[in-house]
Every structure is written in C-alpha cells, then in structure tokens.
Image 1: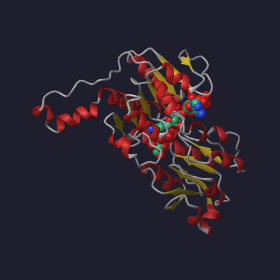
Image 2: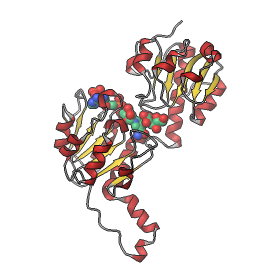
Image 3: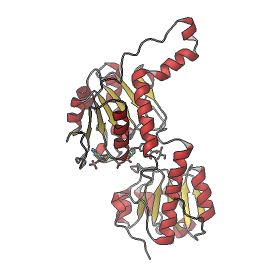
Image 4: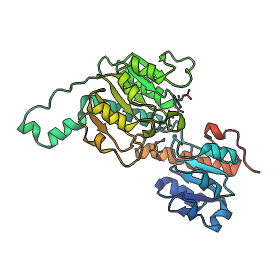
Length: 328
Ligand code: NAP
Ligand code: 8YV
C-alpha cells in the first residue's frame, strides 16, 4: 500500500534514468538529487554531506557506497539486486531493499509467453504473415517442437519459479522438477541437489535464478549437453548465469534444440551468434515491464525509503542487510 504523501527533509540520490512514477513520488516527498550515473567521481561535497538514501535501477558498487558517508539505505528498483554490493552495504551498516512479490505474476506470465514463443515459433509465424508469405507461399511450416509432454526443470524455485511451475501445471505439464541450493520444504516437485542432475532429468530448463558469484555461468556447455538434443532452455533470471558462448555453440551444433532469452550478460548488447541463430526467441528484458507492475515496483521502492526515514524500518530488506538497524 502506498503511504500517504508526507514531506521528509532527506536528500535521496537518483543515479541515471529512473521510473517516472517513482521520480514523481521522490520529488514530492524528499529532497531529490540527480546524478548522471553511480560514479564516485561525480559525487560532490554537497552530496557527500547530505545524501542519506539512494533509489536506483542497480549498479551500486562498494566505491560509490564509500563515497557517500551519510548513506543509510539503498532502495533497489527490482527484485534482483546482484548489481548492488549488498555485502559491502551490510558491513557498512547500510540497508538495501528490493521489490519482491509485486512482480512475481507478471514475470511468470512473461516466462510462459517466452517458452511458447520459443517452442511454437509464434514470433516467426507472425513475421511470416506480416511479410505476405502466407499469401505468396502458403502456410507457415509446422513447428518441429511442442510443449506437449515436456519435462520441465526450474533452476531457482523461489517466488517466480513457483509461479511458473503453477502455470505449467495448468498447462497439463505434470513433470516438474527443480534445483536450488536447498530443498523447498513441503514442495512435492522432484528436487535435484545439482544443476547437472536437473538438466539430465528434463528436456526443458527454465532459469529464474538470481545473478551473482554463486550462479555465474552456471548454465555452461556441460549443462546444455545434459539437457540434450530435444532440449529447450529459457532464461528469465539473469544473463550472467549463462555462458553465452557455450549457449551459442550448443544452438549452432544442435546440442540443444532452442532457447528463449529475456536477459543477457551485457545488456543491452546481445551476442551476434544469438541474434543470428534461427532457433532463438529473444526479448529485451521485459519480464516485469508493464505499466501496472512497474508502478507497483516503484511504489514499493519509494515506500521502503518513506518507511525507513519515518519509522526507522525497511519493508523489504534483502537477506544480507536484514540485521541493519536505523541510526537513531
Ligand atoms: P527468490 O524468491 O529469491 O528465488 C530465487 C531462488 O533461486 C531461490 O529459490 C534460491 O534458492 C535459488 N538460488 C539462489 N542462488 C542459487 C544458487 N547459487 N544455486 C541454485 N539456486 C539458487 O527470487 P525471485 O523473486 O523468484 O526472483 C528470482 C530472480 O529473477 C531475481 O533475482 C532476478 O534476477 C530475476 N528476475 C528477472 C526479471 C526479468 O525481468 N527478467 C524480473 C524479476 C526478477 P536457494 O537459496 O535455496 O538456493
Ligand atoms: C527489471 C528485474 O527489469 O526485478 C528484477 O530483478 O530484472 C526487472 O524487474 C529491473 O529491475 C529494472 O531495473
């Protein structure tokens, strides 16, 4: 719920582009400070003295945190906060918040759309129609792949992973398994303690795992080989979790059948081999990108700042900073 607008005499730094609704609320509630990007060399003496909070799309490193001695909270716009150095923030007594739950259903919807686009080639079929090929050449060729009878593995069975699994059940796909570091208590889907074990057991791997050191290039040549020639890989989590060169090779030499990707290692740059491959379906990181859901994320991002500076508590702290307390 959005808190009633109130005026708080606190400087909030907003680096780079930001969500319009969040900017509007920050402008009305706080003393906004804009900077081109989160670069320590752009921090002025005034910012050093006054800034107590950051609202950001991400990309807050240790050096930027250290450049702001009065910083108390970083409100990340997004549930994934791999581009914020939350461990360093925790060590410095700084709260980090993210935007869980409000985007879960939207991202799960996008994942299912991407999965079907990849398997049934719907974007290519639409291009066929728009290019006049239906009239000139006849029907679009039958899709080689089908969703029917697929065994799905979810890498990252958290909030969004579970929402994807529930949708797949409604699609009549009952063979669902997952890999996390820990088994989810009370969840009946098959648990695989290793990603390779999961990939070997399924023909459809959906990654919705967070970015960061523990998942860096986890989906590599070995995992793709385990998925096999009927394999479909969908990534709605983070591009950094994939060895993109290995993925491009696996698509080119038919180690796997197809891939659907919403996220990339170096956004907005997409590797040319993935763009050129006939068996990829690609989206520009639009998992949560509806006006409705981005507004919910913006409200939660700003509500965290309001709650921190008016009540001394964060609404949705990330695990690393759960123990950080307000300084008064
Ligand atoms: P979540 O509830 O925290 O779920 C993450 C899951 O990943 C947890 O079940 C966790 O289980 C597992 N995990 C974490 N590290 C792992 C590792 N090293 N190995 C194996 N499993 C690991 O988060 P969520 O709300 O579902 O969001 C998940 C991610 O989706 C976000 O972090 C973000 O990167 C991505 N996302 C993308 C979009 C988009 O637009 N494409 C939108 C929103 C979110 P364990 O801790 O037991 O390992
Ligand atoms: C947003 C996301 O695109 O929440 C996340 O982790 O990846 C997406 O919802 C992103 O956070 C916008 O900055």
